[in-house]
Image (cartoon, rainbow, N blue to C red; front, side, top):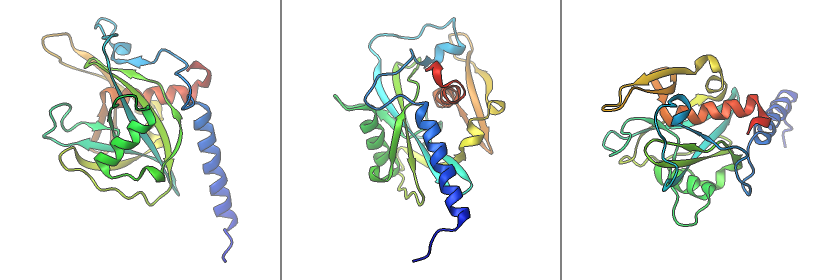
Length: 220
């Protein structure tokens, strides 16, 4: 049996250290969020965000352990979707009944992109996010080694792709943009551009919140 090289051992230790660092900044699966969470209101204080009757949802922030570093798995929604058609999103969706956020995130990822839940090591929960469209989203963070085998569900997902985690966590790549939202005022949002993909809205907001957790672990 071939023993791992010193380089491979060092890479494994770095990966384990990075996973431990990220997990330490997250909320445990069996606990509630440390802070009040984020929302579309953060960049739009003049726009009211619904507080009651929100639809509970969950998304999976999957960190894939590539040799060159961690990558984040993202999807592009199909153009025929009724809501948010063509947008970049994490795998995820509505929670059903008394389903936990992590159960919902893994179920939706399996339905949307064919991800095997058994391949994911759950690390914890990131900052919840409330949207103007009436959703309360819990981001669930997990890790997976390659190969990550996917089978996309075409009615829901047009494409799945990876973006380096370091790129997404670099605040220099976090832009503030606005979009016209007739009949209301322009709405400000975060945006992150990776090659020909523009990640914006709630997805970019949740990535920004994860960055802030890693930079300020005690802030919640």
